[in-house]
Length: 366
Image 1: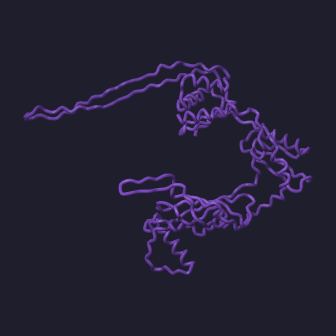
Image 2 (image 1 turned 180 degrees about the horizontal axis):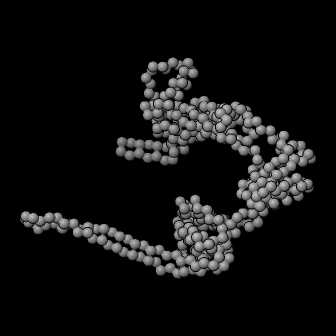
Image 3 (image 1 turned 120 degrees about the vertical axis):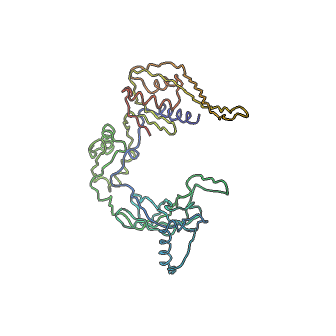
């Protein structure tokens, strides 16, 4: 029932959404060059309550801990220590565009050894590197873990992922990216959903707003904007046009999530004439072997096992529905609902209609 409710909620949103809704330009495009950059680092989480790495199985944790202590002036060479409150982790983060030195960013911490949980741990100062090998941020702080794990002598329970967590504002930017947006002579906008019609509408809307032909559509994915001296800088130019509302044009698409049984159909989906039959054939086979014992006091009697199989077949008596030419979304849903199909069965029907060439939309199965 929950999955069926989710399906009808998604379907209701698709039906009641206005077909000609306008969207802000900033929600349709990305500015070329203005993007985040991935960072990664190797570090140690300490302070765990006996749930850290087993150093015998994770020797790299012991080596990293020894190196850390030596840098702090503690000589551990030749010492036999087996702490259970340390875990080796990989730390990942995204350096946002226009990040300045001293800005704080969120980081994610994930165990790479055999640690049981990172709950209560603290990440020790970890440099974060970009693909060029340079350190752009440093992360440190207490790890927040949403999952938990508990066990007793005969049972255990695990909820979520206790070996991964986050540190809000746990990273501090130490190096800035060499990107000067103010020196750009032109700005290229990349459409998140490429479409020639949407790109043409963006070009028209920008030129109408500015009053000059500064925007030029390059293809279905990009619109180039020349810098106009009437603006103080390219940043001022972007702030003047990013809130322009444009009506996007989307391809007809049907998105199916097989795991949750959710189906989302676009308003432009069209169906050609096709016949749909929905029925359930259920075959149940059960084996109940019977053992026969020999008569009492028989000399050569043997126990014999006789097979016994029960087969039952149930076939639902459903009708065949004929879908007419160029049916709209509401007509399709009404017809399938009249057959009493469930979201799972509707997924199979949509796949079959697509295979038959009668579904004029892009079918995306996740």
